[in-house]
Image (cartoon, rainbow, N blue to C red; front, side):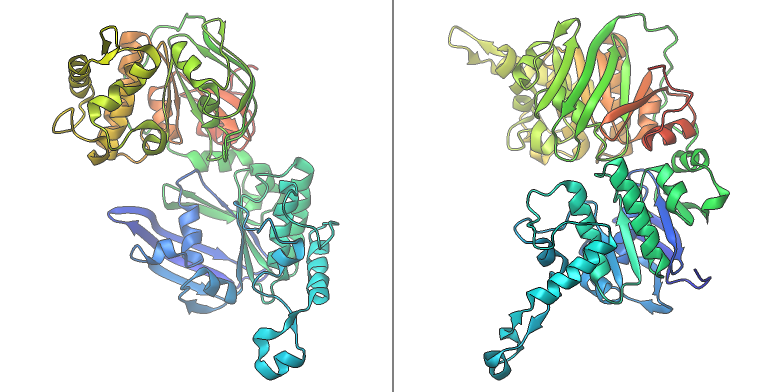
Length: 530
């Protein structure tokens, strides 16, 4: 490595409207360096990489402030294709392969090798044949470079995800003039042995002078492979330093690093929770796209607010969706001592469960319908409430009375209960979701990402409502959230999920280091005994 930088991103600020998602962030990467970029969800990592790649979402929303210097020159990167032409590649977390194409076709896509023949010599290069042998030779060389023995003519469709990840890398190293590669959570889908192989491949690539930006949540991989570490938090640069000067514990603390700051202040529970187990989850597997669970074990105590946290895509959202029967699931779940059948949403609701979904627009609400009809809908369908007469007619008066109670109780800002839900703000839509769940009079409530996309005032009202339901009504609440500080504000305990399993269960006053380690898959000494 040299001291000269292949990439300098200086004083990068990016705003979406009045919201600054990057705040004066600088990043310097040297040739042949593996530079780890760390941070929680929402820290700004993806936005910074979107700036680097000239993604349309950046340019179509007013661009950014600051400058990008690549290979010694100030550059304007207009598009991902422009970035690739300059020698910047990316191995995406989401596979960008075409399943119906062969390995070779995917590696050489948009860089095909052709050969002339009689007609093309007369009518032009567009009529040349593909030189499949030359393309296969290049693909074979790239596959060997990542330690893959797979045949280059194999179709991508049906291959294991680990193979697909290495094909993605082979495609990037096959490109000529590559100077910088970004690896976005490259080991997330790999087995332990495959992850070790990938780290070896990264080190080999770096040894040839190609710089690597390595985005990961696995701190052991950072300590193994990285030369330099940069940490972002809440859109700002926390620190950048050589790997040799840090430890996993220090990295974890810096990633979380908010101490006792809270979004909402509630009085701490003084009495000990003496209730039994409200819900017992054993070996729960959930097949939810992007949130797969792989054997979750968890006990929820009766009368508590249990938080479930973790990084995006690690499985935290899959737990309530699997228990509620919204996605294919297997395992054993009991609710107040009674076995709960999986895969049956109606049975879950009848057993006393209710859920406020993270997808309020896609799953939670009927956007064209009124507030009152949205609030009453599930209770009507599942329990037969809000109906009258032997023909079970809709009891509009009862629905209106209950909706007015909920509007007042939850401070839903609207013109009337008849207002269509789709015309409400995000925060008020979320309150309607809570009201719909409460209409079921549940004994146990799941709330998933309850404050996503709503303003700070609405957040406080939603969180205060959950505390009131728990303290005043004795309702057992499980809150799934990407906002750790919100979990620490209102929960009694917090379970952290990583790679589809519960890694640790921590008290809300546990150290930032303990939470950071748990999010990277490491149990601390502060957690509950297994």
